[in-house]
Length: 335
Image (cartoon, rainbow, N blue to C red; front, side):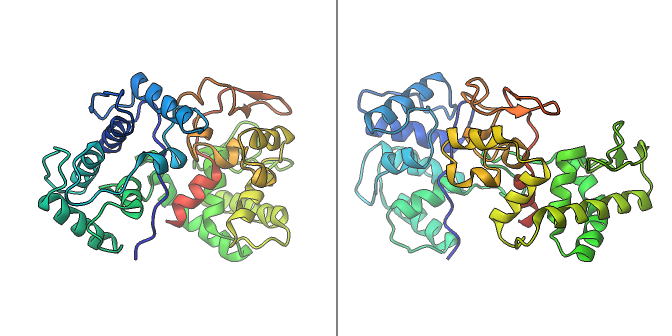
């Protein structure tokens, strides 16, 4: 059986079949809602989501996530005729079916559901039950590897090229010091956008305070030496923690960046108290992990809940920058 994906998080400005399905489900659950099913998450969809959340005692942030979808979906089967079936038909078409979106769960829809369930390796119930809804919404028709929670590419083509060029250097240092090479790549991304250069502050491509590196382009030997230094610093920062454990990786990234108290508070304010000391509130670690921590989407971009310290010893400034967190890069590289 394939791993069952988590429910997606849909936010303003999202587009596509998942949004069409959301619009259909909102119409299904609220007879007073008559959203146009255009696949665009605009103000009307935002307001409808928020209204549905208030009606169901869910925090009304206007973002459609797990707690929202659990209450929106309903099991549909052959003979069902409603807007939930329309939602399922839109999603099945995302995976290559060519169903008419008429809201009628007939034999064609039943066959498409069974074929989808077989392809996903989940029970072939011929019904769109919760497991099937999660797969329909959580999976995409394109490769998810290398993409974020909104199914957007994490690295640009030029960044991917730099990563491939640098990978042998990361791997050599990682092997020597017994750490995952992906951690070195993630820190290099955060500190210097994968460039093999020394910034003007002379702290090098991994920005290790107290060290001095040449400014400008680095030779292979200089970059390898800097990568070795970064690996040593990771080992020192991690202490005795097992870096095959993901929470320990997060905490090490957080420690590498200084573990500012403001980020612990930020995590707690956003509901991540359990992982506050592991960097859940740090953009350096978790930027763009989800809608609550994504400065590129509303309302996070404007509501001053996700900030970043942008100067040494400063206070959080809002919103955070747009670079992905080190842990997001790390997970992407793990595949």
